[in-house]
Image (cartoon, rainbow, N blue to C red; front, side, top):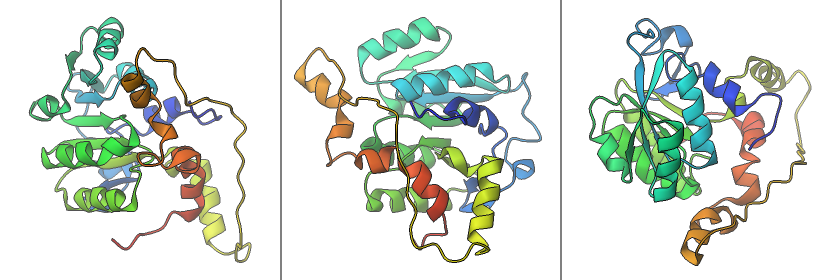
Length: 247
């Protein structure tokens, strides 16, 4: 878990798709008061949501959705049967599925939260946007620049939909204020930034088989993960390097 005073739980609650600031809608950032849902979402007419991937982040997201009156956890997807059993225990009211495509075919689901391993984001996000869903995708968006660009293009081209990446600091007012000050050049030109990570969170998990071990330990394999800098450092890198990207 990304341990910080600004937790992922508070981020999700503050920037849920119902009241989201700093999102992409057809490629443009839109303020919260202009978001698709802000004027019409109530606890009596909640946003119906599905969580794809019920690992650590997926469970956190599902728990937060359940706490927000304006949102309804409609479905949970994971390809591992034991995760679906866990979902049944913690969220018995939510439909469970082993294939995310069955959720995208459900027209009653308005928004999907993608919390799968990084290398699976592109396939799922593109399919979700094509299905007309609003999408929240955990960070990092993808493990290659090619996949990142493909997702960004699809988000820009999506008509009347919201796309958000799970970058904690992007919508936090204090960090946005500091970011604006730094970008104003009031401190001069920065030549280098330095960050440190002091929380030990082993990525190697215990598992019942070799195939399951590879599924769980995907962050250890560079062909499917950007490693520590990409999986964790992206939050700090993004804070200083955020700018429009030529796609």
